[in-house]
Each structure stands twice: as C-alpha cells, then as structure tokens.
Image (cartoon, rainbow, N blue to C red):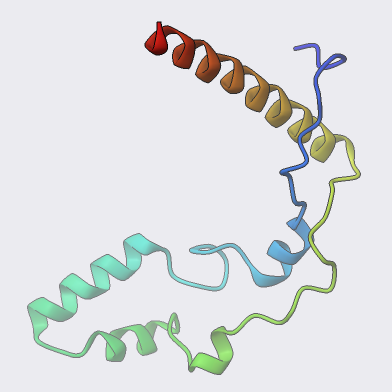
Length: 110
C-alpha cells in the first residue's frame, strides 16, 4: 500500500507506553473474561461466593491493587513509523468515508 499521498489523521493518540505500564486486560497479571465467566458458572453451580474462588486464583485483589498509576507519558501524536502509518491509514479512511457519506447524501436528496 502506498501512503505517500495520504493525509495523516489528527484523531490518533499514542498511549502505548501508558498501556504497557498498566498491563493488557485479560493478559499477564489478571484473569481474562473467559476465566471470569467460568469462575462465575462454577461458583453458581457450587453455591459459593465468586469472590472466594477469584481470591484463591489470585485474580481479584483489593481495589487499591487494581488501580493503575498515572501514565508517565501523556498520550499524543505518534512519532515512530508504526504510529505514523496508523495515522496515515486512519486519515485515508476518514477521507473515503467522508466521500461516501456525501455521495449517499446527494443521492438521497435527488
């Protein structure tokens, strides 16, 4: 794909570093949604509080443990090649959908 003539979108905020410091949802340090659903079903079947099972698995801590620290880098315009590519593709997508919507609006008003 040639992106030489694409307009970069201003709707891209690069918060990859902040996301990495918080951890991915359902990955690494926590339970995924599938595991939570299974725990819920097992606890319903056994008639126990789901928190008991989640605490035994280590997937549910106190609310203070689940609060993520403020990101050290504020989200902003991407500066690397991947971020710039994403901004270019998004800008082109926005331009194409603007054209399509205008064409559809003109057809419906005729």
